[in-house]
Image (cartoon, rainbow, N blue to C red; front, side, top):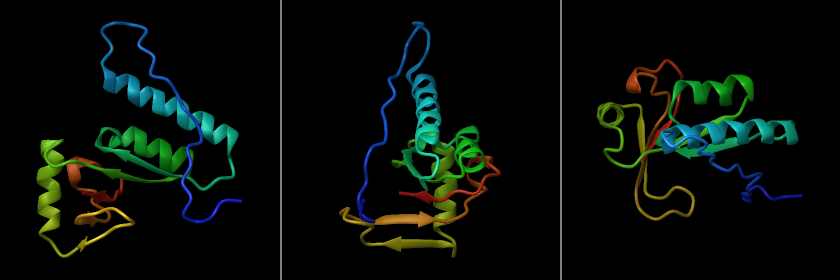
Length: 131
């Protein structure tokens, strides 16, 4: 039995580049979708939370997590990785619905997060943005 603070990897999926003109992001997202499918099949009872970077902040990926697998997720983004997302994030950060914390978990430095930022990048799925 695992404790509440234990985090483990449940599986691995290789990025397959069968064609030379396939870019890394398409392959990485497809590999992640295959991995999610395998994990759900192998561990259907587990309440899973996905932590990923801004590459996965797409509506199809979030819909897969929330509606098909009923999993939670949190995405992180480096400054200016996605210009439109960063601009919207800064606008939300200036509002009242945001929170700033000195430490989140054991990480050093400051973190900022805002809940339910549906207007970010024009998506209609609720999400939490954190930086």
